[in-house]
Length: 278
Image 1 (cartoon, rainbow, N blue to C red):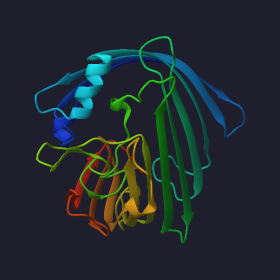
Image 2: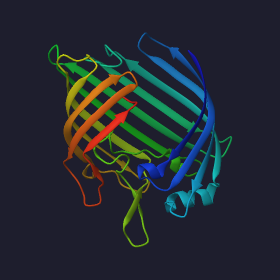
Image 3: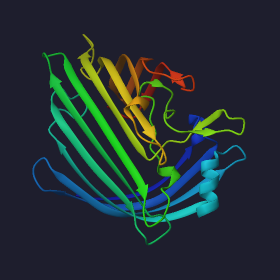
């Protein structure tokens, strides 16, 4: 396969309570896919990205320091490589099978950014009966700079919310900005992430087969470059959810109860999302 992508995306982190920062990225990628076996395609490619960070007087100091060091606009020539194996019986509402995905991204020395970013995802679906399915999803991510360069702050991982640890505000886990008065401000994300989900799924009687209810347990956390990653930092939650592959995209609703919290955690028990699945 051959894919060509041209993109322009803008992120307003203030709307996610992740800091008063605008991040605008434009670029292009060229990617090839080679099926080495029936179930094992390998992807590799190259791309160009130009990223502009817009600051305000309320922006986190981490972003201010990064702009002072590299400027408000950075450019990168990226190399990418990935592998996946998918034996699920259905891409939208799987009941059995396994999925692996390994992906790597490297900022080459040709332009401003020199870093690497690795992610791995594993899913397992086990049918208990003709209607009930047990599911597991786990993800890990790691990023770092090389040749003395810093890891780009806008490439940070985030955790919390649907698709991560439900019951905690979206992207709120992990390091947070320390304000001059000693209080905690915006979430900053980190260069290391782990999250996992155990879920029991069942279709809603009389409804479309893509409409399924669930009982779940989530866990995960994000760590910054200077933090020691320990299991005691993990956050957990349990709850119930509803998922539907609607005409406008995958829709998920959940109500979660956080099991391990600290006074500084931002909680959000009811959550809603359109656009992604597990």
